[in-house]
Image 1 (cartoon, rainbow, N blue to C red):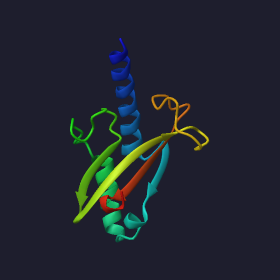
Image 2: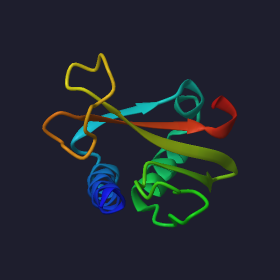
Image 3: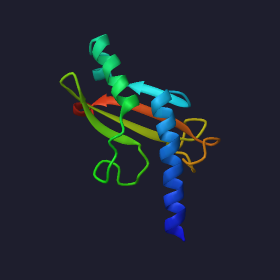
Length: 114
């Protein structure tokens, strides 16, 4: 039974992450200094790539939460990561599947900054 709960929770988290990532609504978005230093056109292309990313698989998404990925844009190796915090942004969320108690933070970075 616990496997079913994990699967349902992961599916809910993945749906919430996809909604946030594709609309950029429902959380906070951070860009690292390396991303911010890139030309505006490249930053726009990276943001579009994050919003359109759909190549989740067992290798890059083992927990099936759609919370992290690597990708290339305009010759730059990039990464995004979604983390889950409580509403005060002081601690991790106790239940990332519950948007009422979770603030999502999407960080976009160059892989070299990780």
